[in-house]
Length: 86
Image 1: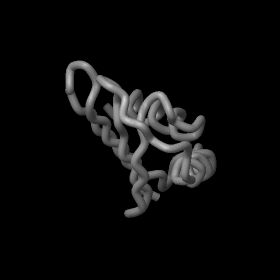
Image 2 (image 1 turned 30 degrees about the vertical axis):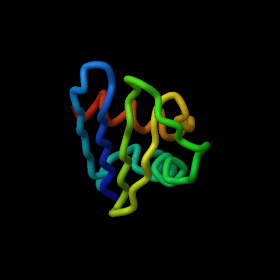
Image 3 (image 1 turned 60 degrees about the vertical axis):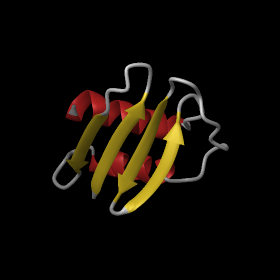
Image 4 (image 1 turned 90 degrees about the horizontal axis):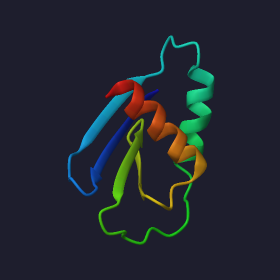
């Protein structure tokens, strides 16, 4: 499974991008479950001035989400990828 996170917006406007392939990873099962949960629709996304917006793509399926309305799975997946893959 390929998981990709793209961050845009924010006060400085500096984008961030990270991607990983879960093949062969010991935590692949956890990442698959987290990715599937992150693709589930969350609360309505109202624009937040200077807030971050994210595109989470899992095997060609993309969800758009934004701070502060991220679901817990979205927030965790974003943290894992941007901390690890940046």
